[in-house]
Length: 190
Image 1: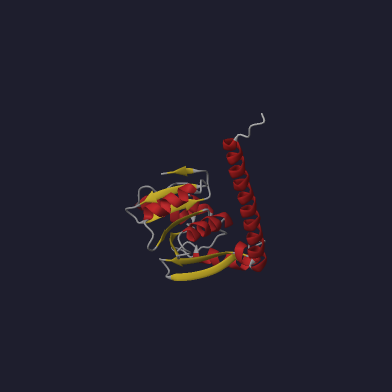
Image 2: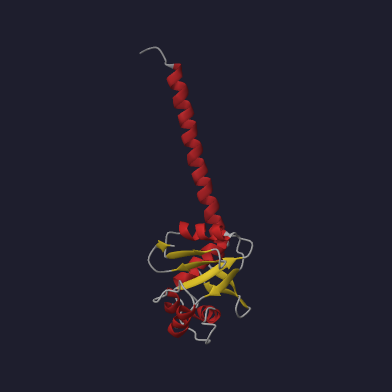
C-alpha cells in the first residue's frame, strides 16, 4: 500500500481535469445563454412566417407569436392568405399549423413557404373529390388544420423528411404534384 500506483494516479488526474473542463464549459455556456437571452429575449421567442400563396400571388411576413401569446391581428392576416381560393372563404387556421410551418421554415434558413393549398371549404373539397383521386372526404384542410407546401430551392424529399422528424401530425408526400402536405391531426404518413 505504501507504493503509489502511478498509473492509477494518472487516470485520476486526467478524469479530474476532464470533469473540471466539463463544469467550466457548462458554466460558460449557461452564462453565454443567459446574456444572449437578456440581450434579445423577445427575438429568441417570437415566431415570424414568410408565406407566398402561389394561387393568389399574395405574400405575407407575419410575426404571429410575440414571445408570450399569439397575436390575433397577425393570425387574421395569415388566415386571409390561407383562405379557400375557390370562394374566398376564410376560417380560423389552427395556430399549431402555423407553428409547424414556422419550424420547417426555420430549418431551411427562413426561406419563404410557398402555399399551394391551405383552407378548403367542404363544398370546395367535395368539388375537388369529384374531379381528382386522392382527395380525402374528411380532409384536415376543411378544418383549417392542413397546408400543402413547398420551399423554393429545398428538395421536396428534404422538406418531407424534416416534417417527419417533427413526429407530429400528418405528412403526405406528393412529388408528382410538387408539394408536401402537413397537418395537425394524428401522427401518420403517406
